[in-house]
Length: 257
Ligand SMILES: Nc1ncnc2c1ncn2[C@@H]1O[C@H](COP(=O)(O)OP(=O)(O)OP(=O)(O)O)[C@@H](O)[C@H]1O
Ligand SMILES: [Mg+2]
Image 1: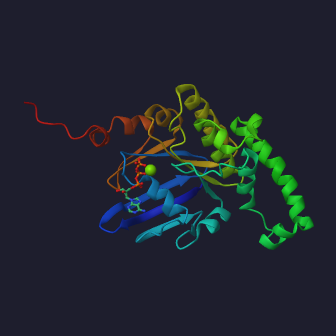
Image 2: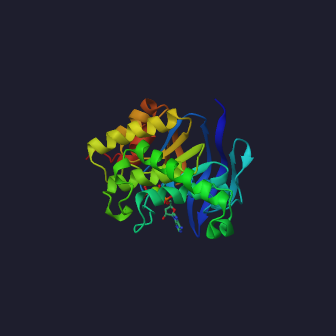
């Protein structure tokens, strides 16, 4: 499997804060790759760099060898990268189905004028977009909620809806920012199954996740960030027992009294 995403020497600063420091990272096609680390480690910033929300001060970001630097978020979407947000960003008053169709629109060729005028090409796309949206809602397990307003869905279902919307853009790479946050154990285990099935459909997954049991179960590889630096990378079992990782999560051992 080829290399899909590659970051080399990426540094991101916000004023005096170095959010990401000289980061090298690559994700291969077909992987479920997890990015973990304490709060403020720079994980979401990595997503924001990949998706064109922010531009790195230094370094390169490539997708299948093509530079993503300087590209706007919608351009990155068109190149096949989709994401969900740590803080949900759904259109609360719109139905679940409509929220997914908005995702599909991000990939349509018809420009805004066509959409406003309801030109035939646009109508055809809207029909197939609606069907695709229903299929995606079924895939994420909320088909029966298609007509409900997004804001009426449970927190866990809203996270699933965000994933459906991201998939509607037909990504090759899906970035999930803490998809199990706020979920109970049965919801978490269902979500693990969903992430696997998405990967099995040919979508590479880059995951930010705090729940260690989820990370250890579904990841092919894991990288650990701490204060913007990568402090460990490898198979889940190796990362879990890495002393630097344990220190980052639990704090430095104090001297015995
Ligand atoms: N837009 C911004 N402006 C200023 N500082 C920012 C901005 N975005 C992130 N930061 C800072 O960059 C650092 C990394 O933040 P980031 O959100 O990437 O962390 P994270 O690993 O996703 O943390 P969490 O687990 O809490 O979501 C933090 O110190 C944060 O305060
Ligand atoms: Mg974050």
